[in-house]
Image 1: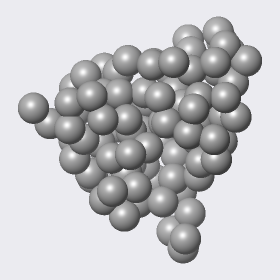
Image 2 (image 1 turned 90 degrees about the horizontal axis):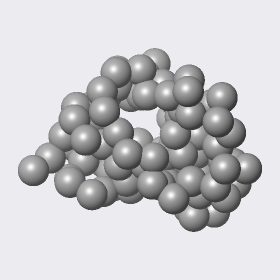
Image 3 (image 1 turned 120 degrees about the vertical axis):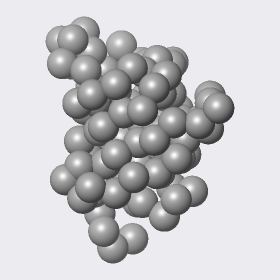
Image 4 (image 1 turned 90 degrees about the vertical axis):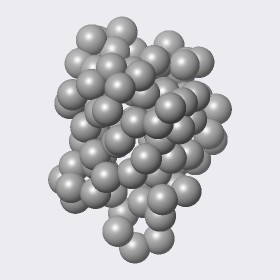
Length: 95
């Protein structure tokens, strides 16, 4: 099974396989999301889920605070999607 991730403000859509992180799906599709540690510790890959269902994964409580979780923010390196989603991200169009 796969889901669609729409990335705003660009409007790009990428496909995510079941269990694939948001970051991995975006990078494999050529959409360069900021990232660093890829282990849920640094918060460089923090994005906001505007619509859709997701699983947070192993995000550190220091990198993703409780109030951010309530605002539907996730770490793209840990979070997986459970439906089609729309995210808001700081996108670097040039690698």
